[in-house]
Amino acid sequence: MTPVCPCDTGKSYDECCGRFHNSDQAPKIPLELMRSRYSAFALRLHDYILSTQSNRSEDELKALEQSNAATNWLSLTIIDHGEDFVEFMAAYSDSTGYYAMSERSSFRKKAGHWIYQNGEAVPCNPPSVPARNDRCWCQSGKKFKRCHG
Ligand SMILES: [Zn+2]
Ligand SMILES: [Zn+2]
Image (tube, rainbow, N blue to C red; front, top):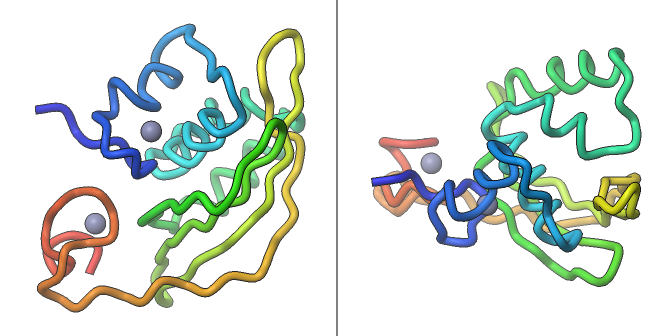
């Protein structure tokens, strides 16, 4: 059984963001790119994140690795999306607790491929933390206490 993609489409990783991470296929719309970047954060594929955004400096890679090192990405919710933007909420945890962030991301096309341009934080209401015996809010299907609890 192939694992479910972290980006919450319910598809297997190979059919969803895996084809962008592990092959030459490129996302055709910003929504696919945004999902694949979220999955790359969740799976710590920092090279992929760097390769799909406008800022590709060494410092940016180091900053990414550092900020993402202690973060567990738990769920992605798409709020709105259009021709060149995606607004989403992502829930995550670190050693200090559970959080969510929301952002309106802008994308542009460069040499025929969509890349992430920048993001603007928007206010969000974090999802409530599941009870210990509820299903985890990531897509594992396990109980919260056996997964990200
Ligand atoms: Zn995916
Ligand atoms: Zn989980």
